[in-house]
Every structure is written in structure tokens, then in C-alpha cells.
Image (cartoon, rainbow, N blue to C red; front, side, top):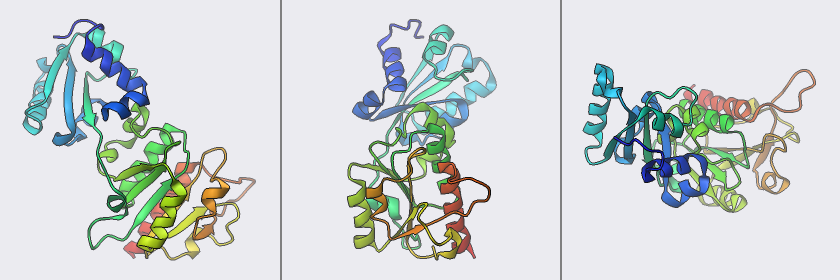
Length: 269
């Protein structure tokens, strides 16, 4: 049992929770909670930690047995309650957390690998709110999006708040971070024949007037500033989301959800 917060493993977990730089350097991130850890594919698990007494219940013992079954070679450590509480990122810890390996995706993964998939991509520029990011990833899975592209000034997708809000979808939705978003957008258009739509105040046609049954990507900008002029300038077309009252824009995750589900509706019917 680990009984000290000075233990190097505990220090490393704390660092991974707090610092995006450490997550990127080690290619590891922290997943916390019973359901969340259960969602992690076995080949991505690096280590699992549980609070003392967790296995005293039949449910806890079964949970650890299930972890061993899907990842038999990883380290599984029991941690004193005070130590576990000190390293937990949640207000009411559930007594389990895991170190998880980051997945490696390509642009081809994001636009869809199989022959029956039609590209349905979300392009995110400089989103900052972890809740928005997590909601978009979760909605992307539900709406059948093929993947997500982000620039490197977007909130870290592997931060604990984002990971929690995805409810496991982070393991099932391909995603990449690119340094040159405009170049990637041009590649989507020229190399893969994907129509790239920008949700923009200058849009003259409503989003439900477009045909999204062909390969499609949507651009969503920063919560406060929207899309940069440079990125928006690389779009195939601008579209608008009609709004009543005096609103000028919607929450980024709400706008993204509307566009993804309109695409899902058109392709389903």
C-alpha cells in the first residue's frame, strides 16, 4: 500500500493532473472514477490505483478483477485514503483512478477509414472551455461524426475536466491536434474533397439549407471571439444558425451539436 504523498508515483499522478506539459511529455493522462476507468480499453491502461478498503466490497473486488482481466500486465496499487484524497481531482472521489496512454490518430482516421463512412468532421479553433470540448466530443460520437481536428491553442483534450465530460467518448472518437489549421483545412478540401463550412455571422444561408450528405466538415471558433478571419477565409461556405431575440451567437457546443445532428438527420433519412 502507498501511504505517503511523497511517493514518486503519487507525485507523478499529481503532476499529470495539473500540467498539460507533463501529459504531453509522457503521453499519459489521468482518468478517475469507476465508470470512467471501466470505459478505458485494456491496451490503453498503464496503471490503476484504488483507495484502501475498495476491494472489501464484492463490487470493488469484481471491478479490480475486471481490470486484471483486460489488462493483466499493468501495475495495480492500493493507496491510503488520505493520500488518495490528496491526489484526486474530484470533490467526492470514487476511489479509483488510472493512468492512460494517449491514442495516436492520423488525419485519415479522423475523416473515416472504412468504405461505408462519409467524412463528418468537426474543426475546432482555440476553444477554451473544458465543458464545451467534452460535450462536443460526446455529441460527436452520438451524431456519428468521424473525428475532430483542433489547433494547438485549443484547450487540452486530456485535461481531467474534459476527460470527465466526454463520458468515455474520448476513447472512441478519433482526434488530432495540428499546428497549422489553415493548411489542414486546405488539405481536407483538395486531397479528400471535403466541403468545409464555417459557422459565421456572415453566413447568408441557414445551416438546414445545405446538403451535408457528401463529405463534410464544420468549423467552430473560440467562445468569445469566434473563428479567426484567417481560418474562416479557408472555408468552402459560410452558414448561419437562425436565432430569435437579440442573440448574436450560441454556445460553441450547442452550435456544434446542431450542425452534427443536422448532418446525422440528413444521412439517416
